[in-house]
Image 1 (cartoon, rainbow, N blue to C red):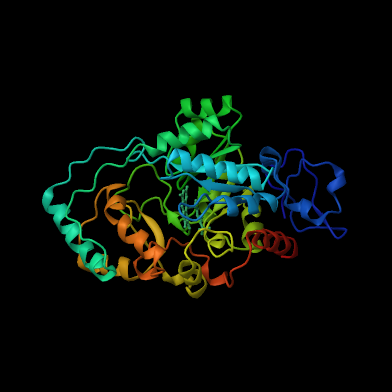
Image 2 (cartoon, protein in one colour; image 1 turned 45 degrees about the horizontal axis):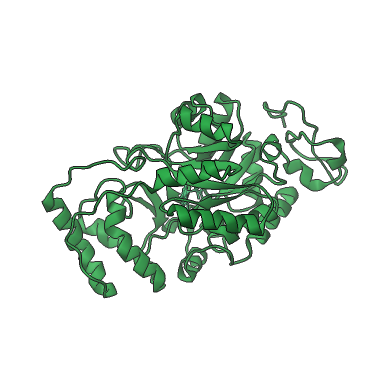
Length: 397
Ligand SMILES: Cc1cc2nc3c(=O)[nH]c(=O)nc-3n(C[C@H](O)[C@H](O)[C@H](O)COP(=O)(O)O)c2cc1C
């Protein structure tokens, strides 16, 4: 197999005394030869000061301090969610991560152009009536108060969280659904913060590269959670490129580290990503069923019980397209032909139902974000075991 293009100063990986089928760039000294895991060491590991190129996605309502610290302690990079987290709570969570690990970690924010800053939308009363009328059916089933009101604009929590990230000099600022401006990137760099941005098209990769970011995450359409675009596309058919062609195209076009994401759950996925020229993987869904994740127990169990064919892409939870497990919420909403409110407003309209469903372990009414790697997720284990399994499988595969 040919040496990969981005190899600049690395050695051919050696495993058990034999050359492995393909080589990875490795800036570590010869002393790591003989350590089988050195074949996984890419320049990204040096850039982020981590042992393995395994990054945990910053997942809203899932990635708290315990999960983040466990992954960073295991040699990967944990990323704390900051989306919709008020600044005082975010500071406490950052403090907690720092108590649990002295390793690098990241903080994630979504910078969608309709949320950052929160946009004004004209929404007519009849649409609000239709949406709330439909959602009241769920509220009645859950026994929570009905609502008739127009969902208000979101508070400016994203700007507040960004200020905290900069003040706290977090090692890595991870961005989803947005293109941080040159000013934001410069401010991060001035504070020693690396900027990692997730995109789902080559065009968006070129735009974020132009703004000076350090690392690009190529998010394939297999990914769980929101499609990483900063505007809502005409339909879910857009920006829906598989991880394989997307990663390959971005690696060919851009000479900064690229991380592959979407449906990756094991060592085979990690090897495949590296073979494409990615310097690491970012995984979300595999970390939901771990002891340390903040996800409700019934959500963790659903991930184990579901197959890769059980996901759908929908905007019914937040007004932005996201891959989730089909459940009563998604199916009844679709069947009803009820309109969906604009990005963010749909979230404000549905959040009381989702929170109640999470609290009461009722997955049929919950937003079950999940990617297409489900067929190979079999058990709830510790986050560090996920990382060590990945490393072992990648070496063995
Ligand atoms: C439960 C869940 C929540 C997510 N929340 C966020 C988020 O808040 N910010 C973000 O940038 N990406 C978020 N994502 C998307 C991930 O960044 C990533 O693209 C995805 O998890 C990769 O695919 P996989 O889930 O198949 O591993 C989320 C994904 C999941 C599964």
